[in-house]
Length: 532
Image 1 (cartoon, rainbow, N blue to C red):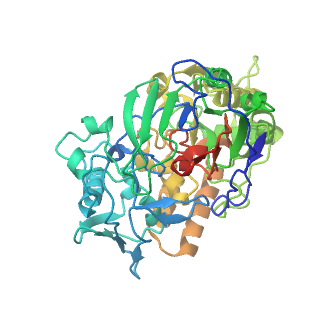
Image 2 (image 1 turned 60 degrees about the vertical axis):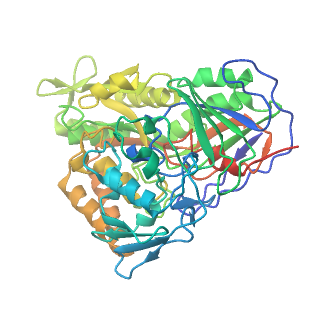
């Protein structure tokens, strides 16, 4: 059976709890990860593994890490709730001071007590110039973090930052376990100590991460006692292993998930997400850096057909990183499918068709390469559809696939079928995607987008505490992006999962781009109950 979670506003949706009838478990499957076993164990097929398991380097920054807790957490409806804090923070009238009272009954998995010292250590280490955390810009507003005794922490901000409380779902590391070692290369990155419901018992890179229930977890020992995250980048291989019973659950593209419809003992869930697919258009490339080419591609792409044919309805069209159902979306920035208009725009700009149908201007052919990660069927199908739409207006795109190690070396000059998205504040997506200071900074601003007007409005939106000012800033960013699209946004995809129907308490949240290990129907696996 398929359970499709409701598509209400992205920022405020209430996600329904799955209420499924009991079905038989999948057949006992052999194989390397031992899926299809007892209800107190769970083997999940995920597409990607993290680079590190240390929150000091960015692991779990959006919550749901399983190994750690933040000061706050998101519930099923994405509302902030206390975790290691006893309550939501007290915020000063000027928005510059956040005070958290901390729990006094929490221990790390090695038995050491959790205190305010660990919170200070975590945030100060992340903000240290020597720490290789690509997401440290998330905490740019933090001026200082101080402990007042063992159970109170005070954050002082340099300027108002409206979504700061959302940033405190960041996992807290152990100062005792992680201190005194190289933060970038030390053993804490693969053998972390946290306060979370699960403890890492093994990590074979490229194969699996194994976790076991933490018997001393402050929220109570989980009933699902063992988790194995099987790392399987290829979508078809994940589907095959799920069908054989080697896996209990897997994330799959919609067309593969559909092949499991009606199978006994399995349930399919669709989780709404902010996860977008987009094509980066490198600013320094003579073709993709041309504004007229960018605007023409924006008009040529048939987003509705992508949602219908590639996603089989499990998603929405994307006109930017902010979903169209979000209250932050700027109405009027939608781009119609208008290939005739795209051709006229290119004609007027001097991009004339050649004998082979490919346009050229001043001796430069309108051609470029588009990469997608090998084994990712959704990105492959998006890339091929995009290239087909571009061909209709005289732009020649060569589609290539390869591992991320190869793609990383090509991002400055070649386009990439990229993904991203966060269901929280618009700052979370827009700043890292578009601000020129992050051009070429790893997977931040992969297209090297540079627009001074966008930079200014991003800073206004980030630093203001006035909701009206923030709305105006992000509206301006989206309108500028429509006029100068450094990316072609294609779709927002629902995440589709197929899993054995053996547990009570399964539900979904609105998910970010990063899903698999922490985000998925198992976001609250510590609360599941094994069905008798």
